Amino acid sequence: MTTVAVTSVQPSFDFGEFPELRAERVDLCEYDEKYAADIFVHRGDPEVQLYNSAPHQSIDETLAFIREELELYRRKQEIIWAVKLKDTQRVIGCVSVQNWDRYHRRAEMGYDLARD
Image (tube, rainbow, N blue to C red; front, side):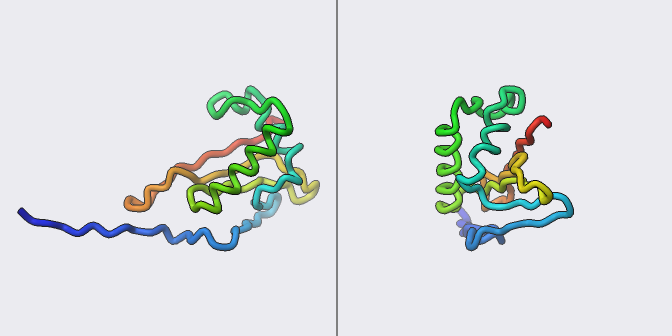
């Protein structure tokens, strides 16, 4: 019988300082409670959430969601960016990476965008 040692493969993403990404019309930035009203718009919309989680019913639920997402980042399990329009500074959605499989170097990505 041959024994093969398998070592853990870490992603190149280090979960250090939160990475902000910039594009021509939007910025991808860290979730923050100051965006709760904007996030509630798409997280509370039954059509947007149809294939995701149950729609939020209150701002308090959205605030709890934001805190949960920040904790998942702190625990190096998930990253979620708020999609913020440059011209209005309004958050219109999110992009996330979760369910990391470090050995196979893959993860799931998801997104939500406000209908308007």
